[in-house]
Image (cartoon, rainbow, N blue to C red; front, side, top):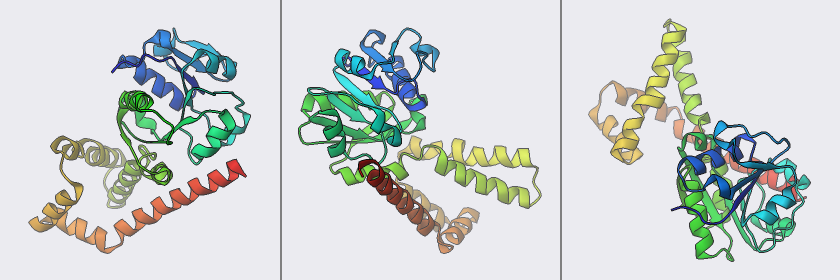
Length: 268
């Protein structure tokens, strides 16, 4: 689906705004002529955006656009003063409630989405939530825009977005943590550091593609390996006994709590 509306990205020359813009152009979802960026500089981050107009005035961008993407840090949102009445406003900010965005921008159609850094590769899983006034047509625009960044899925409650800030919004961080743990243990066992890093990435990045390719249920894969009662089963059982799932859950709860704290800090 090609988006017919004009898309304006506030913060479009930042890393996430730029990633969304590049993916939208590369997939043909948004033609260059229907894309506008605003930011603190006139320069876009990526060569793909060389012909995209970059403005310094956010309100000017709003007036020239049908859809506004807010891609700024939550603590910078207070500096964004715009009148977006009659526009679809899509926020990719963590922890800023839809009601507050509507109040600050004047928009009735507000969507919150949480893409991650993999949007730059077209591999982000992006959950999004739409407030009640958002039309079916506008929802189609949101789906198309974030499908261009990988895969998008609507959630029925806004609180799920705050949860996903920690889960899907983490991007490469969780796989990197696992890879680091594998690498550190291998090095402690005497394996060369460079080999350990390559081996860890081979497991976390390369071999894990089997999971996506087969479309398997992760729980089924784990259980199948445990039932096989081999070396992998021994490792999995030990990790689970040591509270692996509990540690992950605690981390996700911490991220959700941080999102809540950010919301309070922004809204007062």
